[in-house]
Amino acid sequence: MDTQSSGARVAVAASRRSSRSWNAPKVYEGITKWCVYLVFLLIPLFFLPWNLDILEVNKQTLLVILTFVASLSWLGGMITNKRFSFRRGWLNLLPFVFLVSVLVSTVLSLGGFISWVGEATQEYMSFLSIASFAVLFYIIVNTCAEAKVLRNVLFAFLIGASATILVGLGSALGIQLVPFDFADTKSFNTVGTMNAFGVFLIFTTVFCNAIWLVAQKS
Image (cartoon, rainbow, N blue to C red; front, side, top):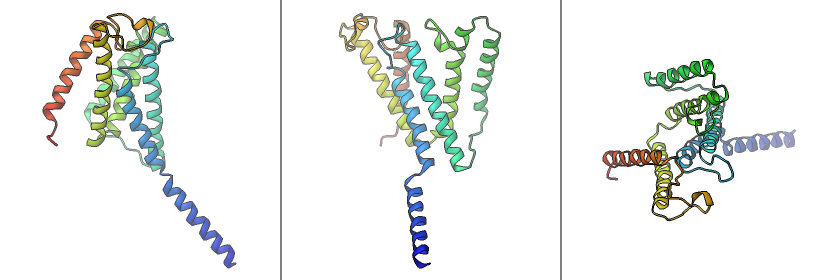
């Protein structure tokens, strides 16, 4: 009896140690945050050279995959904690109302696949992309409220944006930084057209100036 009881105590202690080492809520939270970081880091820069459309389809696919994984991890964390948490506020209505309006427009549209998924550089206007952005909004609001996490998100965006601008400006100056034949042109960038790249430059500049103005000296 003593041997059996001591064995049972050892088993219970081992299970407690394994449960402490495997902290499922922290793991889910980490996966969610890293997916958000990768979205801001990779979306401006991401492309695949073996597709006919090297930018739009690949960026949309990456956005959908990362948002899907982040949403599953977010829900998995709430299920593991046995607690549903959702930040309230009137701002939450804006993406929802916009998504519902896009859904109605998509259902009534004659475009079919183009309206739902997108095609021919129109992926960013599809219901799939807009739904992914809406889900990403709710994930960020509910999981990235801490100052440290927000700093990491901004830092990831600044790294991705800097690399994107470097590639675009290098191409404009005749410096090919991407070792592919399609990049051997002065108009190549990882955003899209030159107009889109110019808008991205303006947005990034204004955004960085805003961060510099509100950042603490420390």
